[in-house]
Length: 246
Image (cartoon, rainbow, N blue to C red):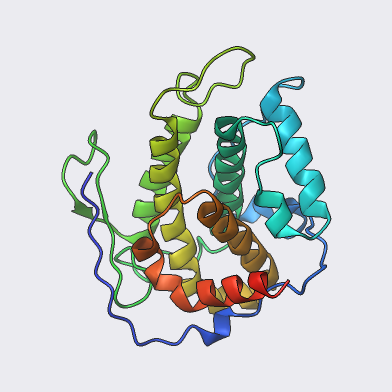
């Protein structure tokens, strides 16, 4: 798939560095949002109780509750990497689903006629089905296309199995990398285009925690090329520096 971007921003991201203080508790995302007033996609259902993915999700939730995001992304000893990747891919999809849902009244074709992550990064959509060539879309249309595309993959049991004994596809890791690369673009758009509105809603601390978790996870398993993360370079440096100081 061809995905076009060009980066040349002088815009400071210093105002994005308000990370959640170390030791803060990670509250359930639903506690921050009145979802009845937002447009969201159908959350990906949890893995059935008793499965390995269900157990790993409970482990991840318990680790996140400790406030140690670095520990929360490390593969538990003896566990399968694909299962761990699957659990977190679903969780990040659900997180962004709700986060983006809080700004849909501001992210309109009129206000965001192009999908960007700041003035120097523009994204074109291609999925090989409806959009067979890179196509310029408004930000809300791009996010709709991206989330529907991702949801179709997450709901496909041949790609994201959640039944005991069903193996992962041999290209599963590459699929996860593609999903994560594209999900990053929503974080980039939220920070670069809607951070003031997110602050006005009082949920910037949760966006920062969600992105910090995402960034530590994708760097732990080398899921997204560094050049793809350029729109949030300053924030990424701040996260890495804070993580290294712990």
